[in-house]
Image 1 (cartoon, helix red, strand yellow):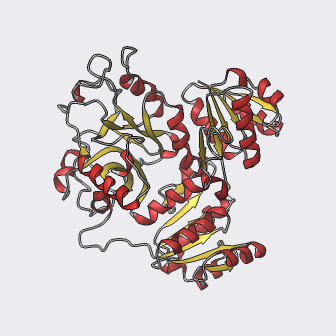
Image 2: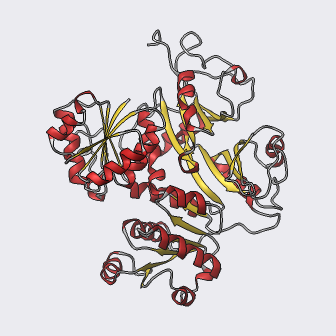
Image 3: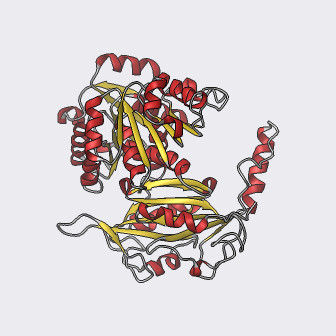
Length: 496
Protein backbone atom coordinates (compact mmCIF):
# COMPACT_ATOMS: atom_id res chain seq x y z
CA UNK A 1 0.00 0.00 0.00
CA UNK A 2 1.23 3.49 -0.84
CA UNK A 3 0.80 5.79 2.17
CA UNK A 4 1.44 9.52 2.47
CA UNK A 5 2.08 10.84 5.99
CA UNK A 6 1.92 14.56 6.76
CA UNK A 7 3.97 15.45 9.82
CA UNK A 8 7.31 14.04 10.95
CA UNK A 9 6.73 14.57 14.66
CA UNK A 10 6.43 11.90 17.30
CA UNK A 11 3.13 10.52 16.06
CA UNK A 12 4.18 10.64 12.39
CA UNK A 13 7.48 8.90 13.09
CA UNK A 14 5.85 6.11 15.10
CA UNK A 15 3.17 5.58 12.46
CA UNK A 16 5.79 5.46 9.70
CA UNK A 17 7.98 3.00 11.61
CA UNK A 18 5.06 0.68 12.30
CA UNK A 19 3.74 0.73 8.73
CA UNK A 20 7.20 0.25 7.21
CA UNK A 21 7.59 -3.01 9.11
CA UNK A 22 4.69 -4.30 7.00
CA UNK A 23 6.40 -3.40 3.71
CA UNK A 24 4.24 -0.39 2.84
CA UNK A 25 5.56 2.36 0.56
CA UNK A 26 5.84 5.40 2.84
CA UNK A 27 6.39 9.08 1.97
CA UNK A 28 6.58 11.70 4.73
CA UNK A 29 5.97 15.42 4.17
CA UNK A 30 7.19 18.04 6.65
CA UNK A 31 8.52 21.59 6.67
CA UNK A 32 11.56 20.51 8.74
CA UNK A 33 14.19 19.25 6.30
CA UNK A 34 16.62 18.25 9.05
CA UNK A 35 13.96 16.08 10.68
CA UNK A 36 13.15 14.41 7.37
CA UNK A 37 16.81 13.66 6.62
CA UNK A 38 17.08 11.99 10.02
CA UNK A 39 14.05 9.80 9.24
CA UNK A 40 15.43 8.92 5.80
CA UNK A 41 18.72 7.89 7.41
CA UNK A 42 16.98 5.57 9.89
CA UNK A 43 14.10 4.20 7.84
CA UNK A 44 13.45 3.07 4.30
CA UNK A 45 11.13 5.93 3.39
CA UNK A 46 11.05 9.04 1.22
CA UNK A 47 10.91 12.56 2.64
CA UNK A 48 9.50 15.62 0.89
CA UNK A 49 10.18 19.07 2.35
CA UNK A 50 7.22 21.44 2.17
CA UNK A 51 3.82 22.43 3.48
CA UNK A 52 1.20 19.68 3.38
CA UNK A 53 -1.55 22.07 2.28
CA UNK A 54 0.29 22.93 -0.95
CA UNK A 55 -1.13 21.01 -3.94
CA UNK A 56 2.30 21.20 -5.59
CA UNK A 57 4.00 19.63 -2.57
CA UNK A 58 1.38 16.88 -2.38
CA UNK A 59 1.79 16.21 -6.10
CA UNK A 60 5.57 15.94 -5.67
CA UNK A 61 4.99 13.48 -2.82
CA UNK A 62 2.99 11.23 -5.17
CA UNK A 63 -0.55 12.04 -4.02
CA UNK A 64 -1.95 11.20 -7.47
CA UNK A 65 -1.48 7.45 -6.94
CA UNK A 66 -1.56 7.28 -3.13
CA UNK A 67 -3.87 4.80 -1.39
CA UNK A 68 -3.99 6.51 2.01
CA UNK A 69 -3.29 9.92 3.53
CA UNK A 70 -2.50 10.19 7.24
CA UNK A 71 -2.40 13.86 8.28
CA UNK A 72 -0.88 13.99 11.76
CA UNK A 73 0.79 17.39 12.07
CA UNK A 74 0.32 19.33 15.30
CA UNK A 75 -2.13 21.77 13.66
CA UNK A 76 -5.78 20.79 13.09
CA UNK A 77 -6.12 23.42 10.38
CA UNK A 78 -3.27 21.93 8.35
CA UNK A 79 -4.56 18.38 8.71
CA UNK A 80 -8.13 19.22 7.69
CA UNK A 81 -7.14 21.43 4.77
CA UNK A 82 -4.74 18.80 3.43
CA UNK A 83 -7.48 16.19 3.78
CA UNK A 84 -9.91 18.21 1.68
CA UNK A 85 -7.26 18.87 -0.98
CA UNK A 86 -6.44 15.15 -1.04
CA UNK A 87 -10.13 14.37 -1.65
CA UNK A 88 -10.91 17.04 -4.26
CA UNK A 89 -7.69 17.24 -6.27
CA UNK A 90 -6.14 13.80 -5.88
CA UNK A 91 -9.04 11.48 -5.03
CA UNK A 92 -7.04 9.64 -2.36
CA UNK A 93 -9.42 6.83 -1.21
CA UNK A 94 -8.67 6.81 2.53
CA UNK A 95 -8.01 10.06 4.40
CA UNK A 96 -7.19 9.92 8.11
CA UNK A 97 -6.61 13.04 10.20
CA UNK A 98 -5.34 13.83 13.65
CA UNK A 99 -7.68 16.24 15.44
CA UNK A 100 -6.89 17.81 18.81
CA UNK A 101 -9.87 20.16 19.13
CA UNK A 102 -12.65 18.81 21.34
CA UNK A 103 -15.09 21.18 19.64
CA UNK A 104 -14.36 19.72 16.22
CA UNK A 105 -14.70 16.15 17.46
CA UNK A 106 -18.20 16.96 18.70
CA UNK A 107 -19.37 17.90 15.18
CA UNK A 108 -19.43 14.65 13.23
CA UNK A 109 -20.75 16.36 10.10
CA UNK A 110 -17.48 18.31 9.76
CA UNK A 111 -15.29 15.24 10.18
CA UNK A 112 -17.00 13.34 7.38
CA UNK A 113 -16.71 12.69 3.66
CA UNK A 114 -19.04 15.59 2.89
CA UNK A 115 -17.38 17.94 5.39
CA UNK A 116 -13.61 18.19 5.33
CA UNK A 117 -13.37 14.98 3.33
CA UNK A 118 -12.39 12.89 6.35
CA UNK A 119 -12.60 9.10 6.29
CA UNK A 120 -11.54 8.77 9.93
CA UNK A 121 -10.43 11.20 12.65
CA UNK A 122 -8.31 10.24 15.64
CA UNK A 123 -7.20 12.13 18.72
CA UNK A 124 -4.01 10.94 20.51
CA UNK A 125 -5.09 12.65 23.72
CA UNK A 126 -8.38 10.75 23.74
CA UNK A 127 -6.57 7.48 23.09
CA UNK A 128 -4.26 8.17 26.04
CA UNK A 129 -7.23 9.04 28.20
CA UNK A 130 -8.94 5.77 27.36
CA UNK A 131 -5.75 3.81 27.99
CA UNK A 132 -5.11 5.37 31.41
CA UNK A 133 -8.80 5.16 32.32
CA UNK A 134 -8.78 1.37 31.93
CA UNK A 135 -5.72 1.15 34.17
CA UNK A 136 -7.62 3.11 36.83
CA UNK A 137 -10.50 0.63 36.53
CA UNK A 138 -8.15 -2.40 36.53
CA UNK A 139 -5.13 -1.30 38.62
CA UNK A 140 -3.54 -4.76 38.57
CA UNK A 141 -3.19 -4.65 34.78
CA UNK A 142 -0.29 -3.28 32.76
CA UNK A 143 -2.47 -2.87 29.69
CA UNK A 144 -6.13 -3.45 28.83
CA UNK A 145 -7.58 -3.57 25.32
CA UNK A 146 -11.15 -4.35 24.23
CA UNK A 147 -12.49 -6.45 21.36
CA UNK A 148 -15.83 -7.61 19.97
CA UNK A 149 -17.79 -4.48 20.86
CA UNK A 150 -16.55 -4.65 24.45
CA UNK A 151 -17.42 -8.30 25.16
CA UNK A 152 -13.79 -9.48 25.34
CA UNK A 153 -10.73 -7.85 26.92
CA UNK A 154 -7.04 -8.56 26.43
CA UNK A 155 -4.91 -7.63 29.43
CA UNK A 156 -1.28 -7.95 30.34
CA UNK A 157 -0.49 -8.57 33.99
CA UNK A 158 2.69 -9.13 36.00
CA UNK A 159 2.62 -12.55 37.70
CA UNK A 160 3.30 -12.38 41.44
CA UNK A 161 4.57 -15.20 43.59
CA UNK A 162 1.83 -16.57 45.80
CA UNK A 163 -1.01 -15.68 43.44
CA UNK A 164 -3.42 -18.60 42.83
CA UNK A 165 -2.38 -19.53 39.29
CA UNK A 166 1.32 -18.55 39.41
CA UNK A 167 3.38 -21.72 39.23
CA UNK A 168 0.70 -23.60 37.32
CA UNK A 169 0.91 -24.68 33.71
CA UNK A 170 -1.04 -22.76 31.09
CA UNK A 171 -3.30 -25.80 30.64
CA UNK A 172 -4.18 -25.74 34.36
CA UNK A 173 -4.90 -22.01 34.56
CA UNK A 174 -8.49 -22.26 33.30
CA UNK A 175 -9.32 -25.14 35.61
CA UNK A 176 -8.22 -23.12 38.64
CA UNK A 177 -10.19 -19.98 37.82
CA UNK A 178 -13.79 -19.54 38.99
CA UNK A 179 -14.89 -18.82 35.41
CA UNK A 180 -13.69 -20.68 32.36
CA UNK A 181 -13.89 -18.02 29.65
CA UNK A 182 -10.21 -17.16 29.71
CA UNK A 183 -7.10 -18.05 27.72
CA UNK A 184 -3.40 -17.28 28.18
CA UNK A 185 -2.09 -16.26 24.76
CA UNK A 186 1.40 -14.97 25.50
CA UNK A 187 4.08 -15.09 28.20
CA UNK A 188 7.05 -12.72 28.16
CA UNK A 189 9.88 -13.58 30.53
CA UNK A 190 12.89 -11.56 31.59
CA UNK A 191 16.21 -13.40 31.60
CA UNK A 192 19.44 -12.43 33.34
CA UNK A 193 21.53 -10.06 31.18
CA UNK A 194 18.98 -10.37 28.36
CA UNK A 195 15.90 -8.52 27.19
CA UNK A 196 12.60 -10.15 28.02
CA UNK A 197 11.22 -12.33 25.24
CA UNK A 198 8.29 -14.55 24.43
CA UNK A 199 8.52 -18.10 25.72
CA UNK A 200 6.60 -20.86 23.91
CA UNK A 201 3.02 -20.53 25.17
CA UNK A 202 1.96 -24.15 25.20
CA UNK A 203 -0.16 -26.17 27.60
CA UNK A 204 2.90 -27.27 29.56
CA UNK A 205 4.38 -23.77 29.93
CA UNK A 206 4.45 -22.76 33.60
CA UNK A 207 3.65 -19.25 34.80
CA UNK A 208 6.64 -17.97 36.79
CA UNK A 209 6.80 -14.97 39.15
CA UNK A 210 7.79 -11.88 37.21
CA UNK A 211 6.34 -13.07 33.88
CA UNK A 212 4.31 -10.59 31.88
CA UNK A 213 1.25 -12.61 30.93
CA UNK A 214 -1.16 -11.71 28.13
CA UNK A 215 -4.59 -13.12 28.84
CA UNK A 216 -7.89 -12.92 26.95
CA UNK A 217 -11.05 -12.96 29.02
CA UNK A 218 -14.74 -12.29 28.94
CA UNK A 219 -14.74 -8.67 30.07
CA UNK A 220 -17.17 -9.33 32.91
CA UNK A 221 -14.62 -11.72 34.43
CA UNK A 222 -11.50 -9.63 33.89
CA UNK A 223 -11.16 -8.40 37.48
CA UNK A 224 -11.16 -11.95 38.86
CA UNK A 225 -8.71 -13.11 36.18
CA UNK A 226 -6.22 -10.33 36.97
CA UNK A 227 -6.46 -11.09 40.68
CA UNK A 228 -5.59 -14.74 40.05
CA UNK A 229 -2.26 -13.69 38.51
CA UNK A 230 -1.37 -10.69 40.67
CA UNK A 231 -3.04 -10.97 44.08
CA UNK A 232 -2.04 -13.34 46.85
CA UNK A 233 -4.68 -15.42 48.57
CA UNK A 234 -6.57 -13.32 51.13
CA UNK A 235 -5.09 -10.04 49.86
CA UNK A 236 -7.51 -7.15 49.37
CA UNK A 237 -8.21 -5.89 45.88
CA UNK A 238 -6.36 -2.79 44.73
CA UNK A 239 -8.61 0.25 44.44
CA UNK A 240 -7.53 3.55 42.95
CA UNK A 241 -8.86 6.53 44.90
CA UNK A 242 -5.92 8.93 45.28
CA UNK A 243 -4.34 10.03 42.01
CA UNK A 244 -1.42 12.42 41.57
CA UNK A 245 -0.68 13.78 38.08
CA UNK A 246 2.65 15.35 37.14
CA UNK A 247 2.00 17.62 34.17
CA UNK A 248 -0.96 19.89 33.57
CA UNK A 249 -1.03 19.77 29.78
CA UNK A 250 -3.96 18.67 27.62
CA UNK A 251 -3.89 15.06 28.81
CA UNK A 252 -3.40 15.97 32.47
CA UNK A 253 -6.31 18.36 32.42
CA UNK A 254 -8.58 15.89 30.60
CA UNK A 255 -7.63 13.10 32.99
CA UNK A 256 -8.39 15.18 36.08
CA UNK A 257 -11.69 16.35 34.63
CA UNK A 258 -12.71 12.81 33.63
CA UNK A 259 -11.89 11.33 37.04
CA UNK A 260 -13.80 13.97 38.99
CA UNK A 261 -16.71 13.89 36.56
CA UNK A 262 -17.03 10.10 36.75
CA UNK A 263 -17.55 10.01 40.51
CA UNK A 264 -16.58 11.66 43.74
CA UNK A 265 -14.47 8.72 44.86
CA UNK A 266 -11.27 10.11 43.30
CA UNK A 267 -8.98 12.57 45.04
CA UNK A 268 -6.87 14.26 42.34
CA UNK A 269 -3.79 16.47 42.59
CA UNK A 270 -1.98 18.04 39.62
CA UNK A 271 1.62 19.27 39.84
CA UNK A 272 2.54 21.81 37.14
CA UNK A 273 5.69 23.92 36.74
CA UNK A 274 4.15 26.87 34.89
CA UNK A 275 2.38 29.44 37.07
CA UNK A 276 0.22 30.64 34.16
CA UNK A 277 -0.84 27.10 33.38
CA UNK A 278 -1.70 26.51 37.04
CA UNK A 279 -4.00 29.55 37.01
CA UNK A 280 -5.66 28.26 33.84
CA UNK A 281 -6.10 24.76 35.29
CA UNK A 282 -7.58 26.09 38.51
CA UNK A 283 -10.11 28.12 36.53
CA UNK A 284 -11.17 25.22 34.30
CA UNK A 285 -11.16 22.23 36.66
CA UNK A 286 -13.63 21.39 39.45
CA UNK A 287 -12.81 22.95 42.82
CA UNK A 288 -12.02 19.56 44.39
CA UNK A 289 -8.99 19.11 42.09
CA UNK A 290 -5.92 20.48 43.88
CA UNK A 291 -3.55 22.30 41.50
CA UNK A 292 0.01 22.73 42.78
CA UNK A 293 2.79 24.82 41.25
CA UNK A 294 6.01 22.89 41.51
CA UNK A 295 8.35 20.24 40.15
CA UNK A 296 7.42 16.57 40.58
CA UNK A 297 11.13 15.70 40.80
CA UNK A 298 11.40 17.81 43.99
CA UNK A 299 11.62 15.33 46.86
CA UNK A 300 10.55 17.85 49.49
CA UNK A 301 7.40 18.76 47.56
CA UNK A 302 6.51 15.11 47.02
CA UNK A 303 6.96 14.31 50.70
CA UNK A 304 4.90 17.32 51.76
CA UNK A 305 2.09 16.21 49.45
CA UNK A 306 2.07 12.69 50.97
CA UNK A 307 2.95 10.82 47.80
CA UNK A 308 3.27 7.67 49.95
CA UNK A 309 -0.54 7.62 50.19
CA UNK A 310 -1.08 7.84 46.43
CA UNK A 311 -2.66 4.83 44.71
CA UNK A 312 -1.62 5.92 41.20
CA UNK A 313 1.07 8.43 40.24
CA UNK A 314 0.94 9.48 36.58
CA UNK A 315 3.80 11.45 34.99
CA UNK A 316 2.63 12.91 31.67
CA UNK A 317 4.78 15.98 31.02
CA UNK A 318 6.47 16.62 27.65
CA UNK A 319 9.87 15.60 29.06
CA UNK A 320 10.74 11.89 29.12
CA UNK A 321 13.52 12.32 31.66
CA UNK A 322 11.30 14.28 34.05
CA UNK A 323 8.60 11.63 33.76
CA UNK A 324 11.07 8.84 34.49
CA UNK A 325 12.72 10.61 37.42
CA UNK A 326 9.45 11.73 39.04
CA UNK A 327 8.05 8.18 38.78
CA UNK A 328 11.19 6.67 40.29
CA UNK A 329 11.02 9.21 43.11
CA UNK A 330 7.31 8.59 43.72
CA UNK A 331 7.89 4.84 43.85
CA UNK A 332 10.82 5.27 46.24
CA UNK A 333 8.68 7.42 48.53
CA UNK A 334 5.89 4.83 48.63
CA UNK A 335 3.40 5.42 45.81
CA UNK A 336 1.54 2.17 45.14
CA UNK A 337 1.70 2.30 41.34
CA UNK A 338 3.45 4.64 38.90
CA UNK A 339 2.93 5.29 35.19
CA UNK A 340 5.35 7.27 33.02
CA UNK A 341 4.58 8.70 29.59
CA UNK A 342 7.73 8.04 27.54
CA UNK A 343 8.03 9.05 23.90
CA UNK A 344 11.37 7.39 23.18
CA UNK A 345 10.82 3.73 22.53
CA UNK A 346 14.24 2.69 23.84
CA UNK A 347 13.53 4.43 27.14
CA UNK A 348 10.12 2.78 27.38
CA UNK A 349 11.62 -0.68 26.76
CA UNK A 350 14.25 -0.12 29.45
CA UNK A 351 11.87 1.19 32.11
CA UNK A 352 8.68 -0.85 31.64
CA UNK A 353 8.19 -3.36 34.43
CA UNK A 354 11.14 -2.18 36.54
CA UNK A 355 10.62 0.32 39.36
CA UNK A 356 8.25 1.99 36.92
CA UNK A 357 5.18 -0.22 36.71
CA UNK A 358 3.96 1.04 33.33
CA UNK A 359 5.96 2.86 30.66
CA UNK A 360 3.45 4.18 28.15
CA UNK A 361 4.32 5.38 24.66
CA UNK A 362 1.69 7.90 23.46
CA UNK A 363 2.10 6.95 19.81
CA UNK A 364 1.60 3.25 20.57
CA UNK A 365 -1.68 4.08 22.30
CA UNK A 366 -3.04 5.53 19.04
CA UNK A 367 -1.58 3.12 16.49
CA UNK A 368 -4.40 0.59 16.78
CA UNK A 369 -6.94 3.02 15.34
CA UNK A 370 -4.77 3.61 12.30
CA UNK A 371 -3.70 0.02 11.75
CA UNK A 372 -7.30 -1.17 11.44
CA UNK A 373 -7.57 0.97 8.29
CA UNK A 374 -4.37 -0.42 6.79
CA UNK A 375 -5.26 -4.05 7.33
CA UNK A 376 -6.72 -6.11 4.53
CA UNK A 377 -9.89 -8.15 4.93
CA UNK A 378 -12.60 -7.45 7.49
CA UNK A 379 -10.39 -6.38 10.40
CA UNK A 380 -12.46 -4.82 13.18
CA UNK A 381 -9.78 -3.92 15.71
CA UNK A 382 -5.99 -3.87 15.98
CA UNK A 383 -4.05 -3.28 19.19
CA UNK A 384 -0.31 -2.82 19.26
CA UNK A 385 1.37 -4.61 22.17
CA UNK A 386 4.86 -4.71 23.66
CA UNK A 387 5.65 -1.23 22.26
CA UNK A 388 4.77 -2.33 18.75
CA UNK A 389 6.45 -5.76 18.61
CA UNK A 390 3.38 -7.93 19.13
CA UNK A 391 -0.17 -7.39 18.00
CA UNK A 392 -3.69 -8.56 18.73
CA UNK A 393 -6.31 -8.36 15.99
CA UNK A 394 -10.02 -9.00 15.65
CA UNK A 395 -11.05 -10.22 12.23
CA UNK A 396 -14.49 -11.27 11.00
CA UNK A 397 -14.69 -14.60 9.19
CA UNK A 398 -16.63 -14.09 5.96
CA UNK A 399 -17.79 -16.36 3.16
CA UNK A 400 -18.37 -20.11 3.29
CA UNK A 401 -16.43 -23.33 2.96
CA UNK A 402 -16.01 -22.74 -0.78
CA UNK A 403 -14.73 -19.17 -0.66
CA UNK A 404 -12.81 -19.08 2.63
CA UNK A 405 -9.90 -21.08 4.00
CA UNK A 406 -11.21 -20.52 7.55
CA UNK A 407 -15.02 -20.74 7.51
CA UNK A 408 -16.30 -24.28 8.00
CA UNK A 409 -12.87 -25.50 9.16
CA UNK A 410 -11.82 -26.76 12.56
CA UNK A 411 -9.41 -24.50 14.44
CA UNK A 412 -6.89 -27.32 14.66
CA UNK A 413 -6.76 -27.69 10.87
CA UNK A 414 -6.05 -24.01 10.13
CA UNK A 415 -2.58 -23.29 8.80
CA UNK A 416 -1.70 -20.55 11.24
CA UNK A 417 1.90 -19.31 11.61
CA UNK A 418 3.83 -20.74 14.54
CA UNK A 419 3.07 -19.10 17.93
CA UNK A 420 -0.05 -17.34 16.58
CA UNK A 421 -2.99 -18.14 18.85
CA UNK A 422 -6.72 -17.91 18.29
CA UNK A 423 -7.66 -16.76 21.76
CA UNK A 424 -11.41 -16.22 21.52
CA UNK A 425 -14.28 -16.53 19.06
CA UNK A 426 -17.29 -14.26 19.57
CA UNK A 427 -20.46 -15.42 17.85
CA UNK A 428 -23.76 -13.60 17.33
CA UNK A 429 -22.53 -10.00 17.30
CA UNK A 430 -24.73 -7.61 15.30
CA UNK A 431 -23.28 -5.78 12.34
CA UNK A 432 -22.32 -2.20 13.28
CA UNK A 433 -24.97 -0.70 10.97
CA UNK A 434 -27.60 -3.38 11.53
CA UNK A 435 -28.83 -1.97 14.84
CA UNK A 436 -32.38 -0.61 14.87
CA UNK A 437 -32.23 2.82 16.54
CA UNK A 438 -35.18 5.17 16.75
CA UNK A 439 -33.77 7.92 18.94
CA UNK A 440 -35.15 6.51 22.15
CA UNK A 441 -32.51 5.87 24.80
CA UNK A 442 -34.68 3.24 26.51
CA UNK A 443 -35.31 1.44 23.23
CA UNK A 444 -31.60 1.47 22.44
CA UNK A 445 -30.81 0.03 25.85
CA UNK A 446 -33.39 -2.74 25.37
CA UNK A 447 -31.88 -3.49 21.95
CA UNK A 448 -28.41 -3.72 23.51
CA UNK A 449 -29.69 -6.18 26.10
CA UNK A 450 -31.32 -8.36 23.42
CA UNK A 451 -28.13 -8.30 21.36
CA UNK A 452 -26.06 -9.32 24.39
CA UNK A 453 -28.31 -12.32 25.00
CA UNK A 454 -27.48 -13.61 21.52
CA UNK A 455 -23.72 -13.14 21.87
CA UNK A 456 -21.64 -16.21 22.67
CA UNK A 457 -18.02 -15.93 23.82
CA UNK A 458 -16.16 -19.15 22.96
CA UNK A 459 -12.76 -20.38 24.10
CA UNK A 460 -11.95 -22.50 21.04
CA UNK A 461 -10.50 -25.99 21.08
CA UNK A 462 -8.88 -27.73 18.13
CA UNK A 463 -12.28 -29.12 17.20
CA UNK A 464 -14.18 -25.81 17.21
CA UNK A 465 -15.56 -25.01 13.76
CA UNK A 466 -15.38 -21.40 12.59
CA UNK A 467 -18.67 -20.10 11.26
CA UNK A 468 -19.37 -17.22 8.92
CA UNK A 469 -19.55 -13.86 10.73
CA UNK A 470 -17.60 -15.13 13.75
CA UNK A 471 -15.34 -12.48 15.29
CA UNK A 472 -11.99 -14.22 15.71
CA UNK A 473 -9.44 -12.67 18.09
CA UNK A 474 -5.82 -13.62 17.48
CA UNK A 475 -2.55 -12.92 19.29
CA UNK A 476 0.50 -12.40 17.07
CA UNK A 477 3.85 -12.42 18.93
CA UNK A 478 5.45 -10.75 15.91
CA UNK A 479 3.52 -8.29 13.76
CA UNK A 480 5.36 -9.45 10.63
CA UNK A 481 3.04 -12.45 10.68
CA UNK A 482 -0.04 -10.31 10.07
CA UNK A 483 -0.13 -10.77 6.29
CA UNK A 484 -0.23 -14.57 6.63
CA UNK A 485 -3.16 -14.28 9.04
CA UNK A 486 -5.00 -11.84 6.77
CA UNK A 487 -4.50 -14.16 3.80
CA UNK A 488 -6.00 -17.06 5.74
CA UNK A 489 -9.23 -15.13 6.36
CA UNK A 490 -9.43 -13.47 2.96
CA UNK A 491 -12.55 -14.31 0.98
CA UNK A 492 -12.19 -15.64 -2.58
CA UNK A 493 -13.42 -13.69 -5.58
CA UNK A 494 -16.48 -15.92 -5.92
CA UNK A 495 -17.95 -14.57 -2.69
CA UNK A 496 -20.56 -11.83 -3.15
